[in-house]
Amino acid sequence: MDAAIKLHTRLGPGLLESVYELVLAPELERRSLMVERQKAVSFEFEGLRFDDAFRVDLLVEGCVVVELKSVEVLARVHSKQILTYLRLMDLPVGLLINFGAATMKEGLQRVVNNYRPSQFASTRLPISGRQPVNDKRSGS
Image 1: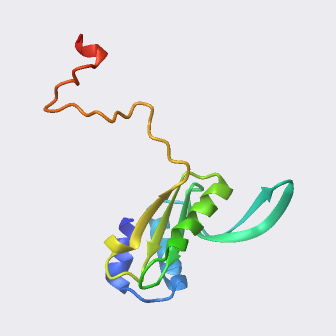
Image 2: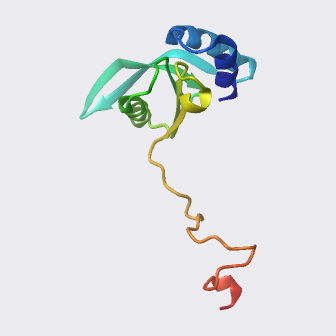
């Protein structure tokens, strides 16, 4: 995300997606990340194999799909697109980056496939560091 913010600040919004891809990939590589551009993806569906069915803009470290856009406003279909990519690739997380947005705060969206809260996550948070009343550790 930091690299995207840097590019957006220096280049500004509104260039073609391909330009941002061209500049973002080496910026990520300079940060010691493995980046594949226009990664062809194959998948199977109902016993049929579809070779090179689609391409993701960037695949970072073999596990994060980065989809780039350069539009004034993201459409709902854009996040659905990356979620479908994540499902077909069996990957947990992707990043949708819209370089057409006025600010990167508006242009960054994390997309998570099959999000499951941690089994240790509690919906009840202690107040002022005290344990909840019915917590078995508190002896109540």
